[in-house]
Length: 172
Image 1 (spheres, helix red, strand yellow):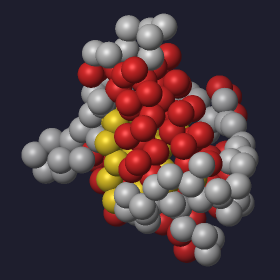
Image 2: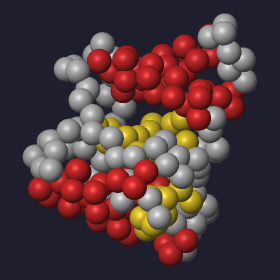
Image 3: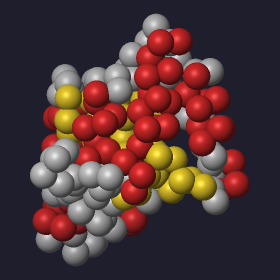
Image 4: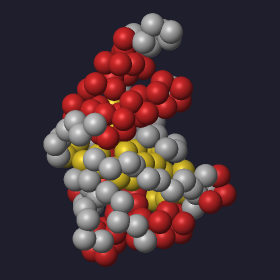
């Protein structure tokens, strides 16, 4: 896999409009969103937090579908690095991650509960390094989780630090 190039939208640049523009104007197959979110069976209470605005679940799904219609390269991996993005309720068990897969993402990595920023950053760094070494997505995630668990300089053996991440969709 080639070097993973990225465009960062941070603080005031992290708006729904800018995210849509970046997603529509790039052929990148990986999208990584690190923010806060909330899932609820009421679509009006389901959102990702952007800079001074909320990206509703409807707009999020439309954003991903619009990209799918415009770009020939599929969204291979969507990482929702926000707390509880794979947590739903009895009406939609997998929350925002499920919406992402139904909107065209081949694979979504999401979280089952609130996560620690420092351990998450380490896990994602390892995950992307594993992808660059051509490991399948699920194996890259598993190896990153094991690496976090085995770190001796941190007390991250507790499952809360590494086991919140799940992959939905295509594991290859």
